[in-house]
Image 1: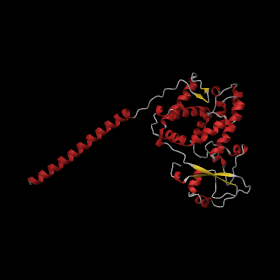
Image 2: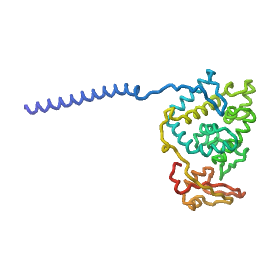
Image 3: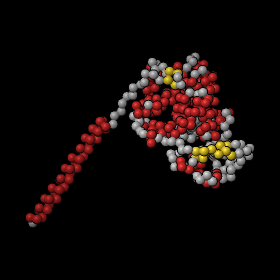
Length: 309
């Protein structure tokens, strides 16, 4: 009988100890949960730089609305950290291709950030049907001489699409006399910007009342220019090894039809996926090419095909 009572007492004490321990841990966890997010994860206001510009044209930060709009874009793009890191990584990979093309046409280097906000440096398609890094509509592509058909979509060719963007921007700059307005027209169209300038009787971007997308457009470009140019200042910590690099490639010119790009790729020691990664403008596994047009195919060197693609 004594042993039985002792056993019950022991079990009761054990259960009580477990309940007390659980209660203590629960209370402790609750206190930690309330305390540590406040002390370990801090969000700070971002001091606005005293001077910001786009392509050498100063942003009038003394205007209260301009200051607030710029503040918004810096906050949004600084604290969207995952997206910011991806943009930094892709910029390191693709800006070296874009920069010399802009320079060769006399287009300011700042316009590389326009491509960054347009597509995140990806060959994406918008709901309206715009494609590529520079988000070019089919009608614009054909107007500027890019080929778009069932076999080929040169809007997804980075070199050709960057060249088109340069030609458009030079034309817009000539029309408006301002790189800032040229950038805005890339979003709203030249006629759209011209119409608003006339309707509102103003002569610059910062004095216009615009819809949200175009109204934020230049501010987003400048924000990403500021953040990516001073990444560590805005809390992005990394080494060069963390960034993406464009693998070494060589070019092959063809002026005939290609019946099977799968076999074509194998002939260079790569697979079809690797061929498509470097030539996203090829839409099919074949190329008709009845006109015998000369195309440049980019082939990754075999020692670089396992790099960041």
